[in-house]
Image (cartoon, rainbow, N blue to C red; front, side):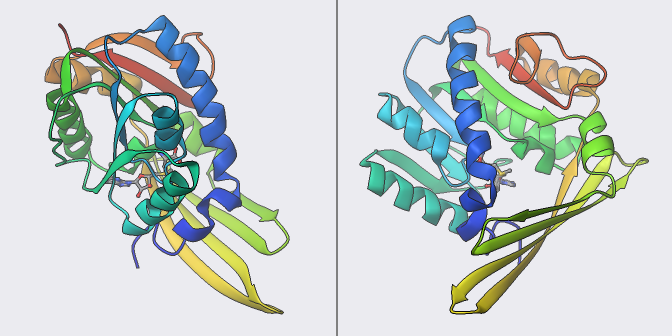
Length: 249
Ligand SMILES: C[S@@+](CC[C@H](N)C(=O)[O-])C[C@H]1O[C@@H](n2cnc3c(N)ncnc32)[C@H](O)[C@@H]1O
């Protein structure tokens, strides 16, 4: 079983929804600092669709792409309930295509750390560049090596949500700057019976200079690099960097 399969069903409830909601209000401020000229957006690696649905409700024409059919199923249900129109598609972000160019591409919540090689990360940047209108904006966040080495370096986290318990166990390779997190969920299904879900997620950190080089090689102009959720420049101890890059007009 791959990642974001069985976990999809409990993803929002396992504490992840709060992050997307925090990201939404940050994104709003980010777009005031880095305006775009139109209202067509691609939410790349959209997961359970929280950001895609909110953008659609705010009047954007939204394309949303994710590799996981089960995350997309959750996203579709969310859109239906919210009566939001989103154009969903199951595609790999290294190879996706869209029927039109968009004004904004977002890729949030360390989805790009799932690109385990520099070639894969570069492939995503090339696809994003091709999907953007000239003048269009690309906003994405990535976990830093500092975050993986301090938050996800052998630590175990346990969260009890009543009918759902979630354990995160991490293993970090300093040499590779890569963390593998084993996610184990116990979901109450009937009476005292629990379903056990296990997935292993691997994230790769990249030095910021390397991300800059990849973006510039593709043709992007870097407009901003922030300690995520603020507008301060990243420090050595930043956990997450929000990148803002523009396809030149
Ligand atoms: C940490 S989740 C973030 C989801 C969403 N962006 C959010 O803010 O909640 C990472 C997402 O990346 C997706 N993903 C991982 N590799 C992918 C790939 N190669 N192509 C498209 N989506 C991918 C996963 O399916 C998952 O939904």
